[in-house]
Length: 198
Image (cartoon, rainbow, N blue to C red; front, side, top):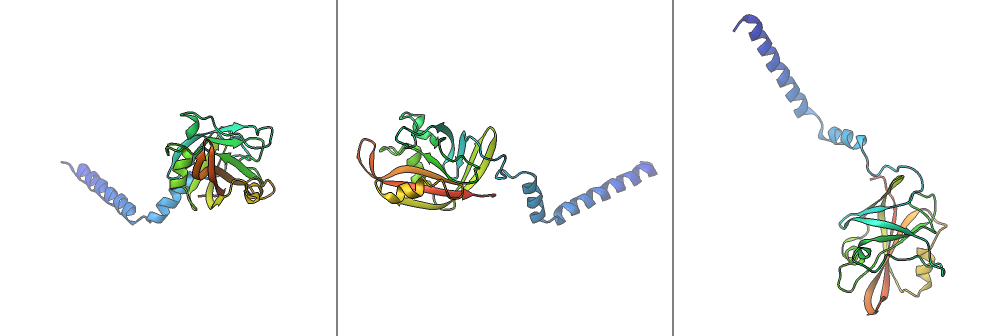
């Protein structure tokens, strides 16, 4: 081996050691911060938007369908089917995700055999759960702030769930309690979720 080769070999080894030392001494916090600043899935994209998908922590990703309210003003529900029981219906007649004000009225089915989305949410979704809502022209993260059980015929449910004057939040309702007949349950559970950046 000639002199130049020896010098080059020593230089390469010293450079490798220097790079290794810099990696070992780098702050883990700084590395995570840099990675997170590059991409934040909860950074809002666009204003109010039409939702097509929702990811609920502990539950998974489900399809969202937009439906106009019925003639009596009540939001429509997903179809009673194998696919419909895993969907969320959004009332497109009311506030949209990303809007400045109003509850985003959503609903899902609960089945007596425990196989529907509502059943899974009743088991897994609580205060603090993250819900990521997305569509072709926007996305928004919401974090559950309240989980409230109502009597279905009570005025409190109508007043709080249908509120379109307050700040924008998700309001997802499912049947709960005891099933007393086809499509009839003793309670309604509503999750309220506020916008979140993380």
